[in-house]
Length: 245
Ligand SMILES: CC(C)(COP(=O)(O)OP(=O)(O)OC[C@H]1O[C@@H](n2cnc3c(N)ncnc32)[C@H](O)[C@@H]1OP(=O)(O)O)[C@@H](O)C(=O)NCCC(=O)NCCS
Image (cartoon, rainbow, N blue to C red; front, side):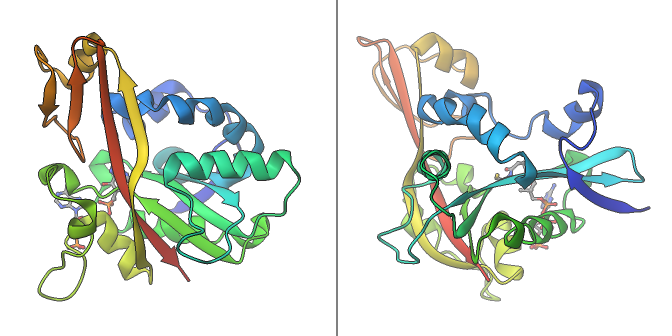
């Protein structure tokens, strides 16, 4: 078995090749961040060189991840508000010709049949390795903790501090970052806000949402608020800021 890492656009991929990688990676509501939608096209185009894919035996995509470059002064108050604000800042810096100094790892996916085998560490290492070519000295990640849906009512500030007896973060994805030398430096309680009509939320969650109120939803890192009078559901997702060396 050989593993190579290349730009995601290095060759044309058939949908059938990529589907197993992306299918089920995130809940349906992940695309309901209306603010992020405004930036994603420019991000894909301008930072295509920071979007990579790990390929097994020259033909099987087994992991993918992407990053954007931003300016960050290195201070906690200077951090982006989260994922969406990171995209906004990356686009703004590019548009105004500011030189970026910080690579922000925005996402990573490992093929569902290949998790727990070290591919995530390989992917993160490859993403961190993109920093010099992006002109960046610092590396950040607004980490979306994969165990958080089991604790949707717990504030992210509390969850981010939970550790195992060996001192490693309780959350598996935070743990992978931590094992590679990443440090939790802050939380981002309002990293992304997803909105939609009640019918859309019913489709995304597979739940009936008959009344105004707060709901625990499948795969939700926090709670969904439904307002039936306004025909609107709103869900704000927290992340954890990790700084890599
Ligand atoms: C998050 C993700 C990239 C991690 O990939 P991974 O290959 O599981 O990562 P690792 O191999 O580093 O595993 C991390 C830990 O989870 C455990 N783990 C992995 N897969 C598991 C599974 N199916 N069941 C139980 N534990 C699992 C690993 O054993 C490891 O635990 P350890 O620290 O005790 O050794 C992957 O699960 C994924 O693609 N998820 C969907 C997309 C996503 O949520 N991405 C992150 C936000 S952008």
